[in-house]
Structure formats: structure tokens, C-alpha cells
Amino acid sequence: MSNESQSPRPARRGRPFQKGQSGNPMGRPKGSRNKANSIAQGVFGKARALAEKVVDLALEGNLVCLRICVERLVAPKKDAPLGFNLPEIGAVANIPKLFTAMTAKLGEGEITPSEIRTLTDFAEVFRKVLETVEIEQRVEALEQNSKK
Image 1 (cartoon, one colour):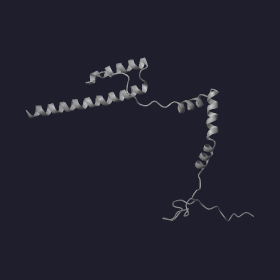
Image 2 (cartoon, rainbow, N blue to C red; image 1 turned 135 degrees about the horizontal axis):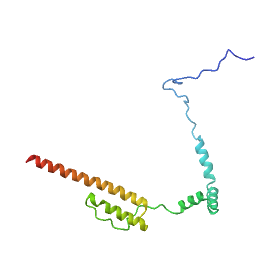
Image 3 (tube, one colour; image 1 turned 180 degrees about the vertical axis):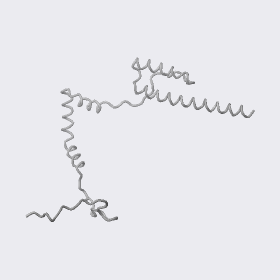
Image 4 (tube, rainbow, N blue to C red; image 1 turned 90 degrees about the horizontal axis):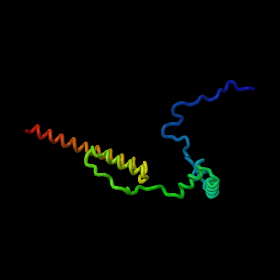
């Protein structure tokens, strides 16, 4: 008794609903939860037990759990003033002095590589400013010479 005359409905292509009509006119019921909310609520209910387990694993030597604990206990380092004076930089030719000072301070452990990255970015911006000023001075000199 098979119904070979009835074939499965072909998949609709294009717009399954009329323009301006929703496929779910009532919308999502108020107060309904999606899977992510349900999972989060379940995790928050067991937060204390999870935290204790992470601490126990860290004390047993689990490096990932140890890192998590240390990150929560020690505040991340904020930007702070440098503990040394930067050399005087008035021209592009003096930028190597800055790099020499930075490398020495890095070797002494007084600054971190991320601080060097910040100083390097600063030096690059400073170089661009100096070049822009120099170009402006050259253009002004050329304009003065052409007026004579």
C-alpha cells in the first residue's frame, strides 16, 4: 500500500512568505529562553563549585588553571611613566639614540618589550612629523625663490 502518486513536496525557492507577512506572526513568546541563556544559567548556578575546582586543579599543578588563577589575582599592568629620561630628539638623525637607550634599558630589565613597541610607534610618528615640517620648509623656500 504505498502511495507512489504522492511525491514529497518540492522545496520552495525564493520567498516562502508574502511580502509584509511574517512566518511567525505571534513572534517569540515572552520569557522564553534560548539555549545560550539556559546554559549560562546552569553554569552560574554552579559557579562556586567551578571556581573551587579550578583552584584545586591549579594547586595540583595544572598550568592552564594556574594561569587562570594568577590572572584573577594579579591586576594587569597599566601604563605608567617610564623610569628613565629619553634622549633629546630634535632631528631624524637622532632617532638611533632613542633606540640605543631603549635597548640598554631592555637589557637591564627596566622596560618591557611592549613598552619598547610603544616607544617605537612614538618614534615613527615623531619621524613623520619631522619629515612633514622639513617638506613644508622646503616648499616655502622654493616659493620664496620663485618670487624673486
